[in-house]
Length: 298
Image (cartoon, rainbow, N blue to C red; front, top):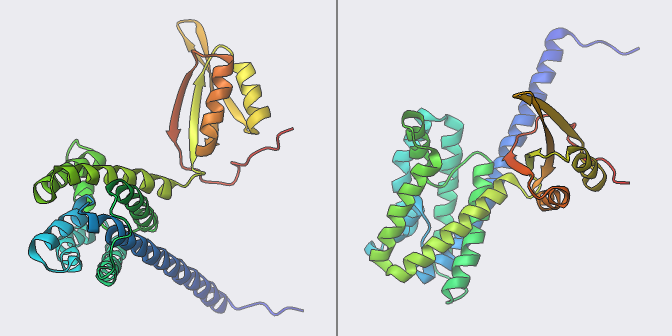
């Protein structure tokens, strides 16, 4: 016969298990941030910086400041980010600020260690493309795990709460100014390559944060809703919802289905195969629960 635990002892065991899970979660996030900062260091020091191609934000300012002063880039990364980190600590949260501080220190150490190595390529296009991709993956991993490398993003989040501008618009304004400054420091051709690298990194960050299998909610408005919905079930293996609305005594039928990013192209082919004039609206959605599963295709 099993002996029942006393309430106090049972509570202590549950508390210890919860603490162990939290510690494991924090360690996993720190490990991911370390990998992300290492990748960002490679993208910068092996591809971008040797070719005088910069990134946006504090990283871009640090690259130009290091070039003009001769001081290590890592010094500027820490010095310029500290005021923003204080703002982040006060306005966003302690965990975010600590993870960001750790990421900045890792990046500073990484670029300092790799600064002795020569760049992998002298081709500006290859440097912008590969540097942007590697940098984007690294930054995406850091953001996905609760940190940041760029103090301008913290300012953008604070301004977003107090102005009518979005975070993306504010960050874009800062980066256009910084990338324009690169034209003065490194030449306008290098500034254009910097813009290419920034765009590639931006898109890569998006994919890294959301993942290739990120979920999209799709609304389809068509008179052929029955044929389209059947094809979605049979060819994609996805369940759907049909929404019926009444507008001036005319009924409109809208299909709502959730698919992954990789299934968007096939879904469009299915819809346009039945109705080339169908309206398709796609948005990112956050799934909470385990019912979003693909049905077997017969």
